[in-house]
Amino acid sequence: MSLIGKKSAVVSLGSSCQTALQLRQHTGLLSEAMGDELKWSRLPFDWTITPLANAVGWLKGPLRFPQSADALVPVETWPGGYEWSGHGVYFGHDFGTPEGLDVAGTFEETRSTYLRHFHKLRKLGELDQVVAIVSNTQNNLSEVLPEADVLFRRHDMARLKAVFERLIGRSCRMLCVTYDDRSVAGFTSMPERDITVKQIARDASETHGSNEAWEKVFADYFAKAD
Image (tube, rainbow, N blue to C red):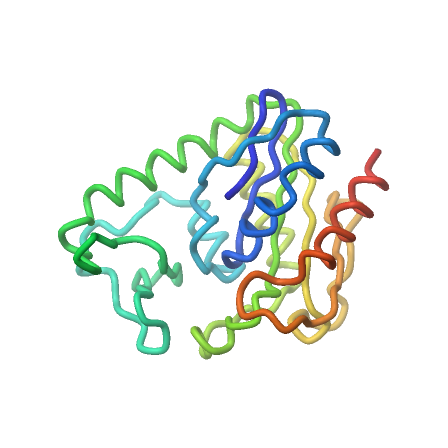
């Protein structure tokens, strides 16, 4: 989940679920760092996989969700995963019922949910501080989406931050967490854009990531931001 308080927010802009999982894991640390009581709140990127260039397109709109269930294509390598055809946004935690997956039957409810989440995302502009977190360190990305481009590039990250800021109507800070081999050469911090890049070592987890590595990243980042 992303984290929203009375005056600040620390939110996931993808590229996968690991970002939201680690925000939830470190709610206390981040609340203290922001000087606010942050609470879990779901936003559009929390439980999707969305490569950077596709995330830019999703934020620019105008569509926030497929117009029909026919636009959702099953992903062969990811049981329960669906790609929004032509948009490169992958849903893997929606459309479920007690009886199993039912895309058509849950489509309108899920669509309404994502529209509410985008409304909530825009409302972040009313807060005093917003920090966007982006990562591509979820280890199973190359297995569930072997054809997806999950590499981090300076141009794509700068565009993502800019279009997010336009959406919410205010500036934000951005923290990017990556592996050395999941970013192109020259992908480094961009202080002139308030974008900080942190590289971490690979861990043995499938999706969650290393709590210890993320804790150090958050502690170092917010200590330097004070």
